[in-house]
Length: 215
Ligand SMILES: C[S@@+](CC[C@H](N)C(=O)[O-])C[C@H]1O[C@@H](n2cnc3c(N)ncnc32)[C@H](O)[C@@H]1O
Image 1 (spheres, rainbow, N blue to C red):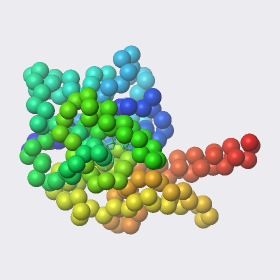
Image 2: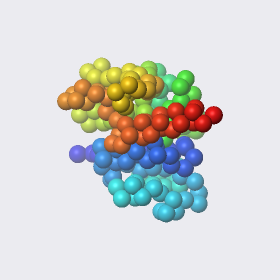
Image 3: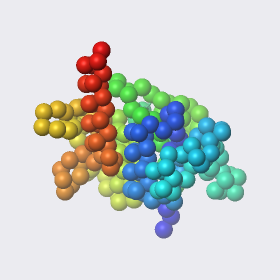
Image 4: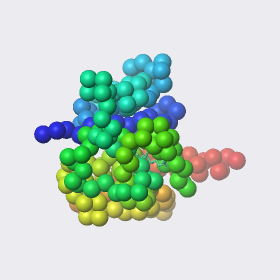
């Protein structure tokens, strides 16, 4: 069976804790051999990659996604086989496109609210076919999880259970609204977040309360 390749074009400065947790979860979800993180700064060495991602066997490159795809295909690139997951695309991804696309490219971007179109940089640069996963902004790990369900599990987008802008309750009294769409875990009935994300959200919230008190 042809395995899908997932490519994340890293577009953040360095690796924040949030990004590390997202990427770590993606590796666990799709397997280290099916993911490559591209477009890291020219002078990147293995020691610049966070330990947690190295331990999980992250494959990475300073090359752009196009060069990686060319290298895998004897120097050729068949753009029709490449799909850019793009919140501004006009068409949604459907299960039958499993036979069309081999590579799925995502922006390694932390979402902003309101949404800023940084995926547009990839759209203009490469000219790959764009596909949307509904009109709401997802985190990169959610976008990959959704693509995996559609393409590898053959589930239609509108059959996936999502939760939009969930209130994440991190203790008895406090909660924070996440401005993204998440897949719901069927068993727990809660949005699927990367491992460790809840603790990070709580830490960030405590930090901002501390900052407020100090200022
Ligand atoms: C947090 S989103 C980035 C959204 C961001 N505000 C931007 O600049 O486009 C990170 C990546 O997940 C994928 N993604 C997120 N939501 C999506 C959607 N609704 N449809 C298609 N792809 C999506 C895209 O590949 C995007 O680059």
